[in-house]
Image (tube, rainbow, N blue to C red; front, side, top):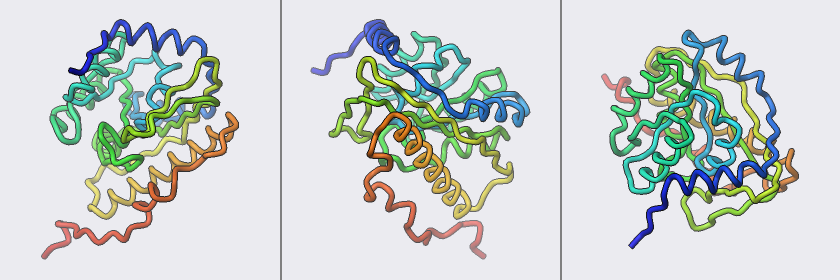
Length: 242
């Protein structure tokens, strides 16, 4: 039988840990630039699932909507996020994805920023899915990549995302990337995949920057996790068929 921790207990544990951390933010001007570019003043923020705990720390005060899967683990995450004031939409790429995307776009109109894990909820590890790119494109708002790294951390090596937990007293560097604004016209399949690869490259470079700022030597993922960036794009675009 799997234990189901109380969201209140999780909240107190995470808050206690977060209060010991020293956050250093770099590139915050990109958030202001994204707000100026957006027709609603809101935007989509994206990060790797692995960095969720580091990213959450200094952002509890923001009006944020996010997606949590309909799995048992997603239920635990959703209940915790709600206790810290986030607006949680249930759904994922495999279950409830369309309804979830519609609810997130509604949140953008209501003054919430949308925060999404690029490779969640089940991976593959650090492989960008289309959700964040397409929500930003469809709604016409900027996408802001964010990466974070702690000076001392524990990583769950057997989990699909190698989830990272900063150790008490660590310094945490959070790096914001320049806002990306996509044309609102529906892209060809090859164009969408190119955007996913380009966004992954931006995230890897941001994480490398964050890693160097806290003295970490493992700036980039193992090459086997980067191979997809160099795969030949042989998938046919159905719109090119005659």
